[in-house]
Length: 372
Image (tube, rainbow, N blue to C red; front, top):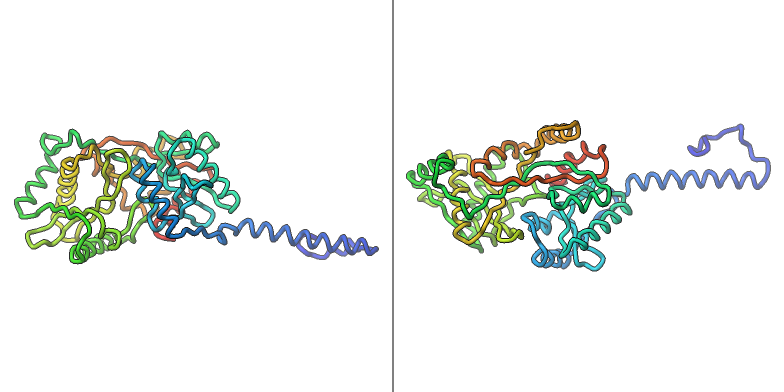
């Protein structure tokens, strides 16, 4: 009763000391309640912030120590950057409510630097009331997290295509080859545009992108990928499928990939009136183009839920949570589509602290992916 400031007539102080003691109990109780409220809502009051200079420092570190196809997105405008104390490493993350969701691993020069960066970030999260979770962690990095008692679960597989032996010849590529031959015969062309891009082309891409999102019934989804932003696409290489009148029916943009001699792309979108097989032609021609540019491989991105056919209740739970969130609907069927190019598959993981966080993480990912 005392702690909730409800008067208890059975406790009546009879001395000045008793009155002061009673008042001290009320004061202490009030402070305890305030502390509990502050602890619960602290993440809502903590707002990370980075300067333009800090993003530039992070970009320099990526160029020096980057090693994955996701490193480019770690300095994307939607992210927060948490540097190590000596600014030799950083973690890229977004916050939503009590979660700090990290994109993959830290960017750092050595394994020891990565371990130290994770430890420092975990300390920052604890101080500020956040729960850290790490998304799309590669299998070879899991030991960074199990060493600090973290748990992990597979969340999909990443496709990497070996370009050294890629060809459109042979029976395996018959469907793709037929689509390319048919569209080429109908007058469609594959074109490559190096940056900086002209405003006219960017406007055409904007039209295709808007149609693509409308057809999907979706908003832009960020965090592990980019969004349509003319100021960013202007400086990137754009690959398109067009007709003789230069109308764009499909496009993709190449983005920096810091894995050794690997290429990758970000957005891949088509117009509402695009002919059947247009994406087959775009990707098939893109892979040949990248091979000609001297790349050994191309990262085709993640197929969420691929390779996690529910073995146990935990994996079934995460599958259910993903499959029932509209934000991830556009990723369904990606494994089947990418398999037609015969890539290799690498498992990716979600690293977390406690089982009861699992159902919350997909919704947290949905919020940050949609900009919340």
